[in-house]
Image 1: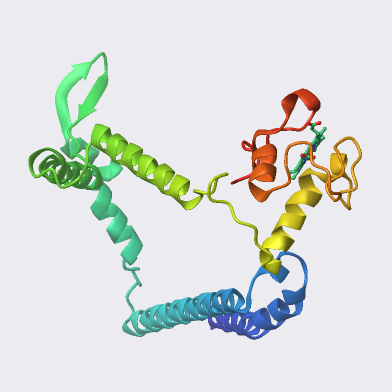
Image 2: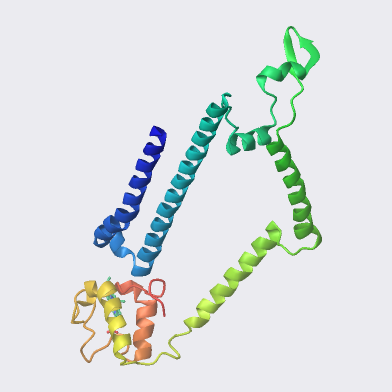
Length: 258
Ligand code: HEC
């Protein structure tokens, strides 16, 4: 029964992992990449970890069961005074079924009478796994032919390309519609949200020349009564959009959205 004891120990280790796994996980929860995960994701990961451990334990129990059955069979064989012959495992049966190979001892049953300078030829079966793939590819080909070329329910490559182009076109025109602001329809807004976003745009792009308070530096003062290009909201929009390239004011229409 020493084998059996070994497996029981293994089961113990599994159970320890099951109990301590989630705890050690919880301890690392506040550090590193885990910080960026939200609670629901952490829950999902935890559940997955627990599921994995439960599966591990179930697998171990199965192995233990197999060992017990085997030792019982050996004992019974001994009682009857016959030698215990192990049954081939499910895996080796499955593998043999997939390859359908003739064992080396029986090779002489499939030797062909072709003899090339002492090199002989065996009449092996095609491996069933290969045959099944071949049959599956035939079935696939029929379905493929029907879907793409007969019923036309799935798009061919050129059609796929055309659909993608049409989608991109539609996206582009809807994006243009969404930003239909220009000189003719722009209005002043004192909505704090709009002002705040304008402030960030200014701080990012304009401070270098017009200075933080708009008092002017390389670019002119924007806070006094005097305007070079007009002080109405339409004029200012026009100056910012098209710039004054000759005098060093950039045209912002390619950088900022309307
Ligand atoms: C590279 C320096 C530079 C940057 C950056 C810059 N400007 Fe200018 N800006 C100028 C110059 C120079 C002028 C004056 C043009 C002229 O003399 O006609 C000017 C003129 C203007 C005017 C017209 C002022 C008037 O009196 O009519 C406005 C409005 C303006 N800028 C707004 C902006 C805004 C908004 C930004 C940021 C998105 C910006 N500028 C970024 C250099 C700059």
